[in-house]
Amino acid sequence: MDSLAHPLPAASRAGGGQRVLVGHPRRGIGAAVRRVLAGMGVRYVDVAADAGGLLAAVEAEPPDLVIIDRALLRADSGLIETLRAVVGRNELPVLVLGRFASMAERRALMAAGATDLIIRPLTGAELAARLRGHLENRLLNRSLQEVIRSLQTFHTGAVQRMQLARDMQLGLLPDDGLRTGIERRYGVRLDSHFESSSELGGDIWGARPLDDDRFAVFLCDFTGHGVAAALNTFRLHALLEKIDLPGDDPAEMLGAINRLLVGLLPESQFAAMLYAVVDTAADRLTYATAGAPKPIIGVPDCPLRVGESVGLPLGVSMKASYRNRSVEFPPGAFLFLFSDALFEARDWEGRPFGYPGILDLVRQCGPQGNGAPGAGALAGLLDRYFAVMPRPLADDLTALWLTRGTPPPTALLGSG
Amino acid sequence: MNYTVRNLGGVREIDLRGQLTFEANDDFRKIIDGIEKDGITACVLGLDSLDFIDSAGLGLLVLANNTANRANVRLTLKHPRGQVREMIEISEFHTIIHCDF
Image (cartoon, rainbow over all chains, first blue to last red; front, side, top):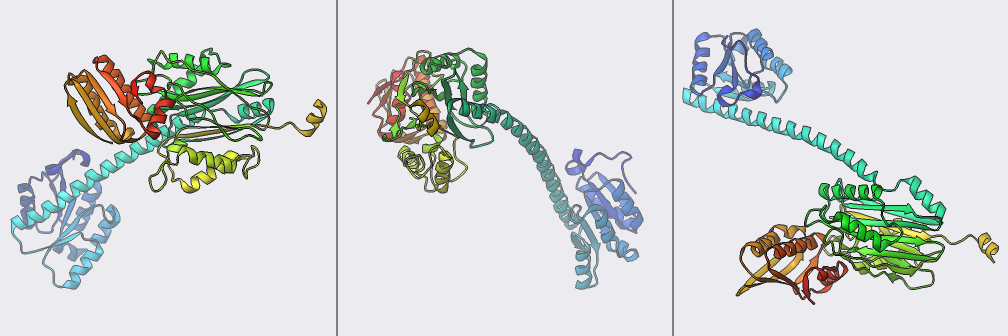
């Protein structure tokens, strides 16, 4: 046996650092094989003279290649099966070197688990060429396995980190308690849909009570999507939570947020936002927009209304100012807000869905269409939408459908 | 997005075609590099043949405008049509970048 006292771990060896185990009962031929290997630059060669020695060497330090002389198999015909039981079926290349009596014997050796048969007689150069092929193949396989393992480890970690970040992002949105609190207090129904195009998204929406008659809702869409856009949603959330802003005046609110975001956002990033205040005593909706899609407003017995929308996106210019728009918003009215993904998304043929398509859907699914007032109009609309639009969308989609309830008949009697 | 460039004295006219989205980022950054480094005095972005722009595309226009301002180059958007015009109007980009409708 010829080996180092402290063999290097396999991963630290490359090329000439590979370890070859030769099983041969005759010392002379074993030495000849070893010389060929040495000529190839293989520095670590173990030679075992019998089956027991070969198995012990494999268990002590798994080699990169095993060469078994056929003569060794005469004493132990099940050696290859035993070896495979130790190292696995495909892991280790096992070559059998020798003269073979018949095709049947060669077939049996391959069936037992030999990787290749090297038929003597052959020259040292031929043997070296065959061995070099197997050793290079082994090296590539091991490198590939290590890369795959490393990628799998990275991927598993990345998925876990991303899931945590996604949970944090969902935590920025109104929870069920806040939503039902607003619904009960103001007699409204608020349905929402939040769908990121990848693990994290650049959209955020919110709702907050202002006083006994008024509450605010907003939808904000930062440029781009993915991690960078998501970081901006955390920025905005922190600003809205921690800074006292004029929440009951949409135009002032957008102006204040804009001044905070200019200089905070990188140059080519900004946010499209709509901020609305619903006044249930005055039956009015007041909103302001900063580059946001036009809202769709439905009032009972009136044609569907596309709200005006002009305003510089947030974070672009310190000089930006915003305008309030006020519309009638009586009981039974609804407000539909959505990020631009809804109409910019493309169908299977690559055509954008388009804003007119959204209006058609609202007509079909809103209270003037087949849908019941407020009762899942958004869910119905999105069902129809995704029946023709492929997922995942290329951009983040957020949609809010807010409906004012109609007073129950008893209240009408009481007020009359 | 595809584009053609014409230089007339110190004025560079660039006709944009197709879609100005995130996919156009690399090409458009070359245009911005040119605004910064080629010593021109004015740059006109012809939008007649631009079919579509999204928020990432608007972000590229902001970048081009900021670069032009720093390099003392007068940037103009010319003849936006359809969806592109609507996006510019909704986003009021004509208030920060000179725009010939």
